[in-house]
Image 1 (cartoon, rainbow, N blue to C red):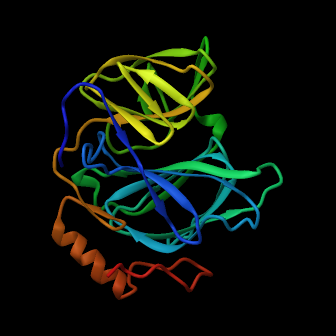
Image 2 (cartoon, rainbow, N blue to C red):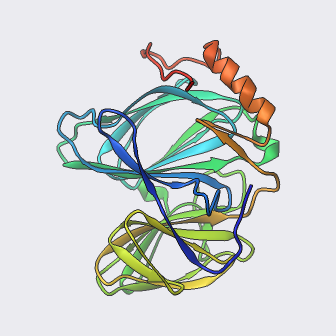
Length: 291
């Protein structure tokens, strides 16, 4: 894995089309930041108007060696997977799916009278080498079980891990932190990132300044390890804070597969082609292996 150790710097995401005109901003992996701690992938999807309820429709597809984390700002998504999980996720809740040795899942948005748009963040957390082949699992966490920290001009919901003396109940397999920070117009917050852990801030709404850098929607500020940072917003803003301890071994990413072993990824390709990784009940269609 390639890591930069210079002082804080800004990277920009790229727009990707997931099909049917549904776009995401993909910020990680990036040529200047292949990962931040164990986070190897970050997508910001939406905001997209909800008209049919099928704006996001991701057919069954496989994962290995990682955990997917879905977090919504607006809208609802229905998750199904090959171990029998079925869950509707709503804003401020957490869907944490541990792929381990292999899992297949689908994600479909739905109409809901409470929401006019769909928007959220999906991240991938690479698993430590000793857990890459763990049994697949899925857990859902309601919004009211997640710690909420507040200060003048800011509010933070701790999605996973430990940050600023709080710990989320979300089950994790390596030291990390992941949080949703909202800032009022003119608000600021002093962030104390854990020592020895990489840290970054992704701007989902508005614009912020931190560590001598300015960032707007679609941009991420990558900080020096263990840095104390004041983040300030001229207008209302919402950002994602994420990071953690670097993984001991490099990680290889190919399509939806993450592993410390290139050979393991090759096996996963063959398994998906052979349709032996599992089935999502009620869904016969699936995303084919890329050529």
